[in-house]
Figure 1: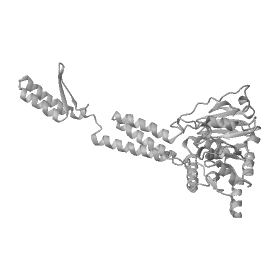
Figure 2: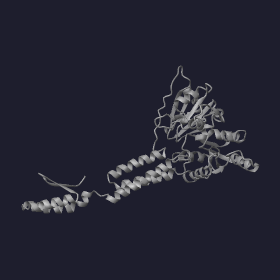
Figure 3: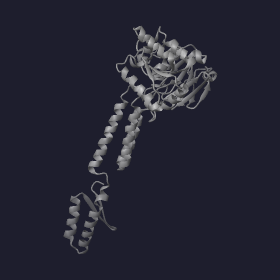
Figure 4: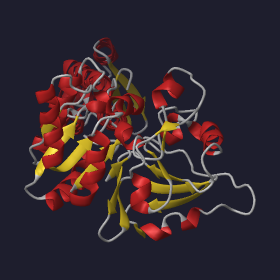
Length: 404
């Protein structure tokens, strides 16, 4: 199973459960190499383990290989853990760091062997390592190194029967006005890099919060999740939506090289509340704002509680970003605005004032009938001083709180 992103997000619970049901009682392990260079690696592992336990309902052991262990016993225990596993998972981090730590070790062969008698679930950075070539995404996108490929594990090509490159985060839209599709490469850089690949190489693009299950027994690929699976060769793309089932033999056929140059026309995706904590928080903030404007207290409280639950749901996500803090800032803002509404009163002031103003207007009407203009004017002036505007019309007096 290849996941484009969201490997520990609420969106991927269903695909994880489905594949782990097939694994049965066999051991499930998390391989921590991709993020092993990060100072918070222990926290990422703990959050991932909690995600699988709480959301997916499966206990997962951590096999630590942040660097090749120097201690023989530690090394053999880790390798034994991989051999015994029925399911190996790896996710966020750096693909090039991962490849360096696995180079000249038994780990790649153990992962390849697991395809014959188990399940491999790679997402995000780990997914990038599976092809014949790997995108050094940090080096290109963050450090400004010229676009280039590095050799990958090449585990997918022998399985599918044709040379393949895997690119997760295929529909990434974080760049806003600049193109960050194709794992932050964008069309221009991907086109240049694609020209460097052997002509028959197929790019397998997996959208964010999307999984593609390659079943080696039926030789089919099934797309699940919120996005799409794109097969691209020499600039020509064929897109398979969620729910598609494609035979291995048909995967490269639709993306065969055209007679002339063809430019891929995949539209940039937009962030969906289903696939981004930030987008979900923004949508709920809009809902809260509309309820606040309508003085709908139940609507305000509902939006606030829904945001709190969304933050809880995304808490185990190992994706390193500031979206969690942004969502909490939105939540705090909601609380403050709801407090301001409570301070001035949520009820329509007309409903509160109506019995009192009506009584005074009746008294004023009686004074006017008696031609007691001084009393009539005094009632009107006192109401005005209290913030109630009175307008005499042919249909009778009308009133409203000042400013409304």
